[in-house]
Image 1: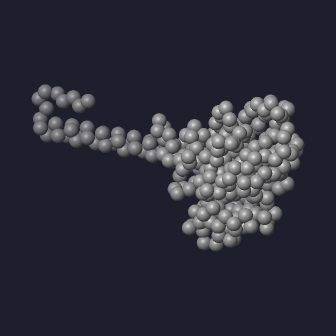
Image 2: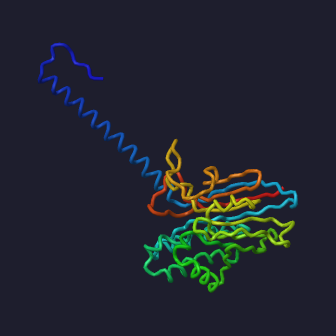
Image 3: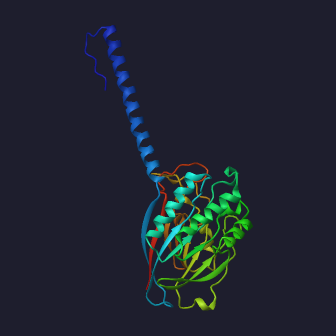
Amino acid sequence: MLNIACGTSMTEYRQILKRWEMKKILGWIFACTLVSAYFFVSISGNLTTERNRVAISLSDTNLGSSSLSIAVIGDIHLPEGPAPLLKLQNLMRDIKATQPDLVVFVGDYTASPRAIVDMSSHRENIINAMKLIDPLPRAVVLGNYESWSDPERWLYEFNRLDVDVMENQTRLVRTANGPVCIRGLGDKFTNRYKYVDYPAECQGLPQLTITHDPAGAFDKHMTGLVLAGHTHCGQVSLPLVGPLWVPSEAPSLAHCGFYQDKQRSVFVTSGVGTSILPVRFGAQSQWDELNIRWN
């Protein structure tokens, strides 16, 4: 509030008014600086990949007491070049050092195909980096960015480099905690999804489904645990507003983290990388360590 005493001359009034206007300008500059610093620190922090530990308890009358630790990695969106590749390699080594029972990759390994000059070499580099978690058991599915960069070639290269990849298939995977039945389903977002049931040999064993777009988890036939990615938890999620855009037909409550209803349990990872813009706000870059117990 501006107070001016009686008898103040016009010249003094103008000087007081000028000082008042300058204080307001400096105040706005200070406020904008604080807001900018907040966003800069938040965005920088959100782009730093962290380990996210989650405990999940599930009830299954067909299964005795069982537990499993699963590392979930999704939406890497790796750009081309030695520096991003080294960062991915180090991430794989860090995850391996935690010694999970199982590592699952839920798709979107490459950055935009239009930004990749040599996709053949880039594809091979990504797959070889994923192999650094050997000899830990793993399960792999493709995402929409692989669908947009020749999915058949991705499938061929995974197999050529001796990395098993699933698309609407099931596998019996042996872990340190015993065998697990894994169902790998195609990406719903790019129409490569097809529901398949578990085979008879999976009865009485821990079962889980991996897919890219969590919309696949809401197939009317789907039951049990589903692990997915794709959403980046919105990538930009504003306070009070939430995510600006999530490209999935999954219910909004199943866009990030753990969701459960009477038919299914779904975990959606925030993922590691970014797409469209190299920015994350309110959506941490992370890989997830799920400690799952079936009772």
